[in-house]
Length: 203
Image (cartoon, rainbow, N blue to C red; front, side):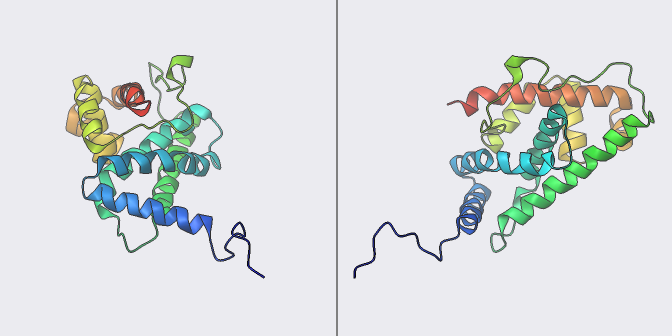
């Protein structure tokens, strides 16, 4: 009897296929393929958000960490080895950024650092809320252009704290800005980047 064409292949693994596709897009992105990079970032946002959400309950903070992860992916994309699985690579980045965020939350809870002006968050009003699959960075060039639109202080905060991964103390010494000013500038910068990139995600 002829086997039905609709019978699923018992050897097909959706998760493995997804990882293969993400790895392929990342490899293309490393070679400068902006379209592949856009597809990759759109696909991984829910995956990253799920990892972060397992340890952080505050929706505002979750979105902050998701942006941190995407910035780290952008900065370190050249280090990815196409011969290795992609999910563990980005999953490790997501776990590390989540741990960094938890440490900050614990420090703030213990009142180790007082800030005169509270940082703004991504979800401060409905106009800043993006759909689940919206992108933050459509391509490396888009990110660079978005960074150029930021005021000098905010751009400095992003470059030192996220792209160069300095500690607050190191960034303060390098920039001459106070730790409190850096924190506020960083949150406002991420909010501005998110708003700047939102129209590109809808195209």
